Amino acid sequence: MVKTRELIELARSREAALGQVASLMAEARGSAHAVDGSVEVTVDALGALKRLWLSPSVAQWDPSRVSAVVLEVVRVAMAEAEQDCFNRVGLSLGEEAGLLVEALSGRAAPARAADDDPGMTVEEFQRLRGERLGERRFPVAAVAESTVEEWEDFDPASLRSDR
Image 1 (cartoon, one colour):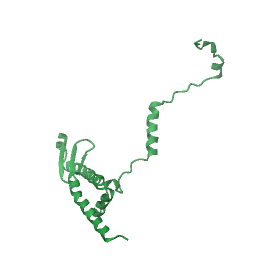
Image 2 (tube, one colour):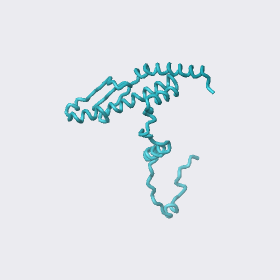
Image 3 (tube, helix red, strand yellow):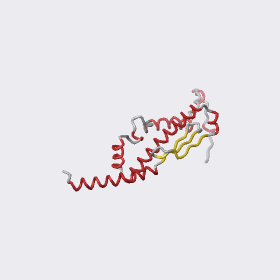
Image 4 (cartoon, one colour):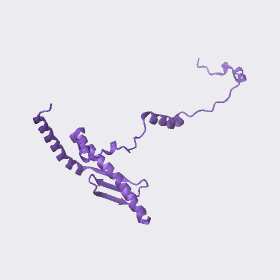
């Protein structure tokens, strides 16, 4: 059974940890860019836009396209900033504090999101790597069909001797 003093100490340590979360969140940042490089965005963990860069070609676009691209890039940057925040909390205060923040916010860290792309397995990576490098490093040489007559005509005396 947990003693009252232990509960009080646990509550105080969690209160101190949560006090540090605000300063860690202020430091967290996330950046993203459009695939074509036309938009670059940096946001903080609270969603404030810290940097927005638009390429000159964006001036030619329809305003609805500009807003759609900017909002999508901001969404990706926000996910990165949120993950940066969880990483900072986990490194500074431990994994338990990070889990506590997840529980209090009601949101899982982006790295644990259900819709996150899990990437590829080690086996799949090695198979694809082998296919890619195997074709370059070890090309299959065309095998000439040999006939029995070729071997019968071979003269071992034609080989160079170092003696």
